[in-house]
Length: 462
Image 1 (cartoon, rainbow, N blue to C red):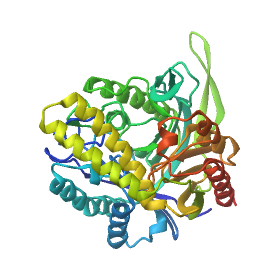
Image 2: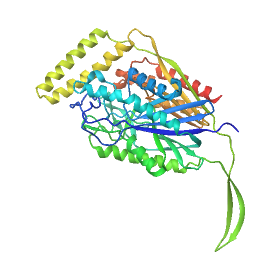
Image 3: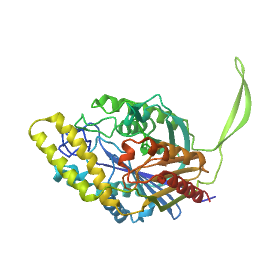
Image 4: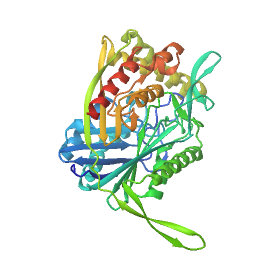
């Protein structure tokens, strides 16, 4: 018998206060969020088996740049004593939370944005520490199904690929659920894995929301107990079937639908291995066969975690000085338009400034480089594999990895351990569109990433 698997959870409230700069939409005409429609959380799941430890963190956030990711992870390391390679820090990718990644775009309330960011390392570390204090013997099970809240978001309008919603197009609607129980069969944690951009609530609303993952987690916890973590999938080209709205009812409905689908799968999972044998026949109105059920003693699932860097190719950029000059011009023009009350013109110019901002940011970070290190992590729990990368991979990359994985259940995620950038497949480069314009990566990055991910899965399986 292998060593017993242990699991524990922790949670901290990371709800932004009113007045914190919100979002980062180019079309957004307000700067600050007015209120939080639901609490924001960071939820931690600690897993241990002997000397092997894995820590999974799920944060209600769009994401963090490299500096703030390192600051948060460094505090988790100091508080827990775990090495950084034992920590998976994922974000739900809500776009209606506080602005935690386009700080340079903030023109009002920068002090509150920085204060919010500075409050996060200790709160994330506290949730991580709590999960390690709550470790207890555990069993796991997994199941797969589908949920229809997402849609392909790359659509063609007048021959141009834009971001929208095409619910009639083929898309990855796979919902994967991992249930982790105590030996009493009561849930410790439920992992909900699904691919969909957190863009239900958009620039029209000044409400902070965790988008659909927030209500989905609440539904799962209401019906199952324990704590639910949302693991965002390969969602670069997938968004909500109804999104880009200011109607808060829509994200709550989407979350309810996903939560109920997850709860349905989770309830069907029995983390025990049971053996049925015939007992006897009872005579009633009909002759009824009765059976005995006994738990079978099985080996605990093997826990293993691997962290490594792969290297993704970088594209070429326009000269940085040229991009920054254009950015400065657009920002000044946007400010003047807003001060003059010309809000519609401001929104258009502000959107152009946002686009120029990420072009300049890419050039500032990567110009002159042929490739860049990119984090890749894998966690094995028996025949369940969680594999994650930074940035935003396309759904076809996730599907290709899952199809070739040696594990019965493979949950492939982006938005983990910092780093921004779409990772399009070669076909999408030929089509063009926003993600292609915004990516710092050269064609072939996604295909290389898939090869590296499959190698990591193979190494975990050994």
